[in-house]
Image 1 (cartoon, rainbow, N blue to C red):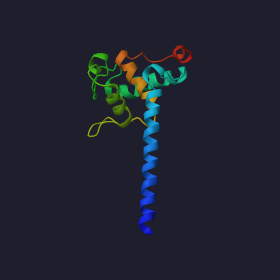
Image 2 (spheres, rainbow, N blue to C red):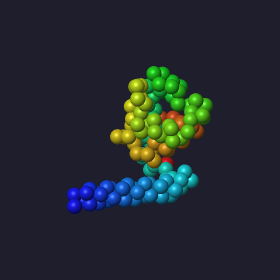
Image 3 (spheres, rainbow, N blue to C red):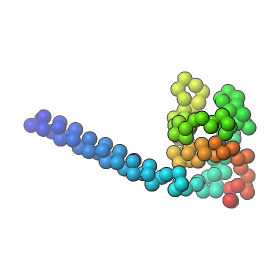
Image 4 (cartoon, rainbow, N blue to C red):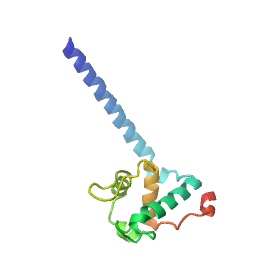
Length: 131
């Protein structure tokens, strides 16, 4: 009887994982880049200032490099968006690059990466916050 109970628990756990993977796969399809929603204007301003100030403290206030590498379109051109989002969210082991998942969600990290690859906006002002 104990064997049946253990088997049942494993089946339930595996089914739960399968549902979770299926849900994540469906969410990725719905969340394709052309369907992503930009952060609200006020949050965009916060993200711009965060990147310029907090990320800039290591990557240089103009993002031309410092303790960390430059975050310019030409230096990011060969890197995949997924790789860069992963780095933003989780950091890089063995380096000073910490993960920022406590401060931004995946969609915001994707927005930051897209802006970095386009050429990051200057420090946000009140005007940016109301756009």
